[in-house]
Length: 123
Length: 123
Image (cartoon, rainbow over the protein chains, first blue to last red):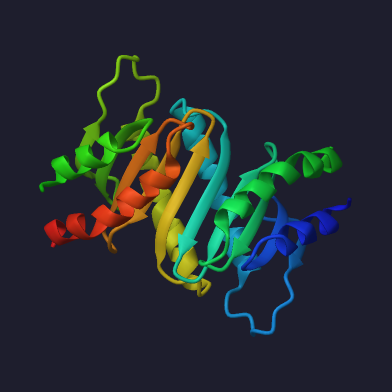
């Protein structure tokens, strides 16, 4: 399964999913998939994830500095969007953006089980 | 219920809870409570939360800039610690740090239901 197929599978399996992205910690996307929708897009998810990627680096550094270990996941909930970010290795992460009423638990689960495949293909 | 009592109630109701803190977005704690434990502390949770508070401000700004609305919650999972941060208003947040195997769902629930009380006392 290639990157796009994998991101499409994740999006297609979660109610309320908006987009999934495989991204470098430097904010450069490797691959992205946006779920088809009839609603006009109101949130610039791509730009938001670039912003979040800078935060990810800082959080990872802080967690390691204060002995909390390697960062595995960050979930960010705002009024209009829930974003789950799962780190893959030192350089890449995968993120899923969904509606606030979306199934976050399933989103987290899918990112976790697809992480090894994405990681394998990144090697 | 005063701040400390409230934080103690939250910590005491969640399996694996380590500490709860009411903190300003500037990283200055208003009140903190650490759950009693027989284990020697290995993670400097207080310092880590100060670091995370700087990130909170950035994430909030990004979410608002890209139309994702007001930030409500961030969860940060690392190998040794799960931290749930719930914003109370523009100036304050409440955070719960727990062991990775702790009951995150209950932690989120308790922060949510205690938020109005904390907020009322902050006014």
